[in-house]
Amino acid sequence: MLVLGIESSCDETGVALVRAEGQAVPQLLSHALHSQIAMHQAYGGVVPELASRDHIRRVLPLTTQVLAEAGQTLGDIDVVSYTRGPGLAGALLVGSGVACALGAALGRPVLGLHHLEGHLLSPFLSADPPEFPFVALLVSGGHTQLMRVTGVGQYSILGETIDDAAGEAFDKSAKMLGLGYPGGPALAKLAEQGDGAAFKLPRPLLHSHNLDFSFAGLKTAVMTQAQKLGDQLDARRADLAASTQAAIVEVLLKKSMAALKETGLRRLVVAGGVGANHMLRSQLNAACAKAGVRVHYPELHLCTDNGAMIAMAGAMRLQAGLQEASFDYAFDVKPRWPLDALASGS
Ligand code: KG4
Ligand code: ZN
Image (tube, rainbow, N blue to C red; front, side, top):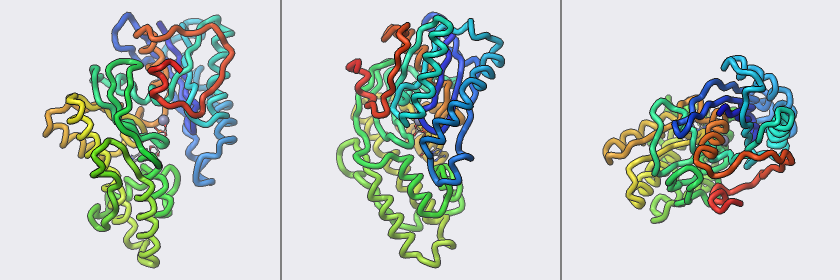
């Protein structure tokens, strides 16, 4: 079974092909990505209308590219999977529209998927795929959640952010430090030259005795500190970046370890854009090694949005018999769509 995956929920157009045989872990044949970062950089963030228009320009050439790279033709595709939500409505409409048009033209069924399920299952694209059950730490630009994952489609939320997401905390703090968009990677890079203990920043909800997160207060503390520094901000920018990163990473680390303890599970999967963060990875690796927990990540280049995770999630849902791909090409998108709604089928 050859599955085409199309991702267009935000500022990356991703297309990929995976092959699924029986119940074996599906294999990635090819994937291609166009990042809109350069286009949005001038505005300091994603401009939704520009994003939609660029997805329109990119999605078919990328599809041609992945087919050529895999030595396949349009007629070889068995199922077209696409991101149905959550994300920017206009951007989602492009990928969904193209996916359903392709399905209709080829006479092949389509499958609308949850973007976060794509992130969650992206470690299965790595050379060392995880096994169920596991605790998942999903840390992206829009979401921060700890989940108990017992199988494909079986996700229960253990804790989540009550305000900003971890990626948002990176991005907003980066903006206050005068760094460009997207802020996460820029802040992490600057932090390498700084001292993470230089400024005492809050670790929100660290001792809350639950698995929820809050990052809005941290952002305010970074702003207050930046204002206090005034003229000296330039000289202390790397220290403030390092202290911000240290605060975010400490909270993510401690809550992940608490979730493992609470569930008794001995496997952790980290997914989403912030999962690319080196400090987070090295601290989680050390803590998990000490606790006898195996930790899995997607490959670095598949941490942020991509088509491979959407093709993979489509293939895995079909293998699990959770839903059938549909020959109904009337589509809608779900800009807001909680992941745990999947379990109830809504
Ligand atoms: O998963 P993703 O590509 O998009 C969403 O679904 O939101 O995540 C993007 C987020 C952004 O907030 C970005 O700043 C953050 O991931 N990010 C990072 C790093 N790479 C990406 N944050 C910290 N360190 C990184 N190396
Ligand atoms: Zn994402």
